[in-house]
Amino acid sequence: MSITIPQPSMALNSHDVPGAKYRMWNTWDVPVNDNPGHILGWCASVASGAPDGYLRVLIINCHGWYNNTSRSGTGGFGLSLGTGIQRAHTSLFSVLRGKVANIWITACGTARITTPGTSGDGDGNLFCQEIARAANTYVVAATTHQVGDLWLGQNEIDDFEGLVVKYNPSGAMVWSQDYGRNPIEGLINGWN
Image 1 (cartoon, helix red, strand yellow):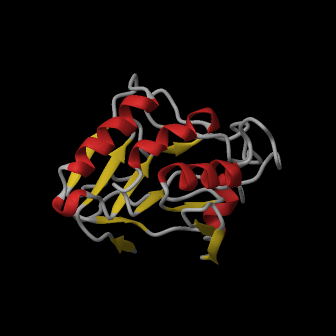
Image 2 (cartoon, helix red, strand yellow):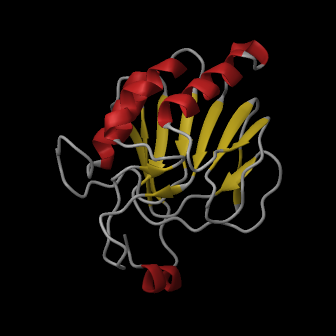
Image 3 (cartoon, rainbow, N blue to C red):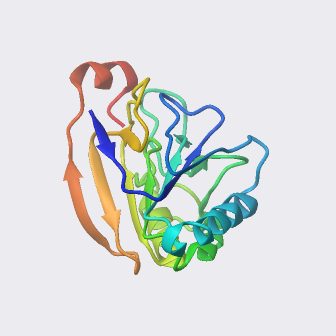
């Protein structure tokens, strides 16, 4: 299944995105050597040129960083987009204030709490809260492994698996939904 995204929206696809590359009103395949400041600055520029001067959704389509590569690894350590986006970079999302209504992150385990309350990486809840506050927007992310479809239509993204959470612009979690996991996928990739 898929989710239809309202337009104008922008998709950021990692160089090694799992599954399909998303195609929106504006689509950018982010180079592996691009840094977070440039990535977010470009998103702000694109948003300024959108109809009504803002994007309805900015979609970040990449791998999420886990604490190890085993089946027991857990997320919350950042995003594998360009050179990487971690908690040290969340303040850079402030360039998106007033330019993006929602940020949807389809990476695995983005909102996962592996190391609760850490001052560094490992608490995906704090990571997402900081992004929401810096950008003054809603943020949607999953806490578990995601399965990417191989083909999607224009303006569509994969549906989510497992627990998905939504943060408001003040960083408060305002919604959550557990969409369940396919038992076979859990046995192959682990339940995290």
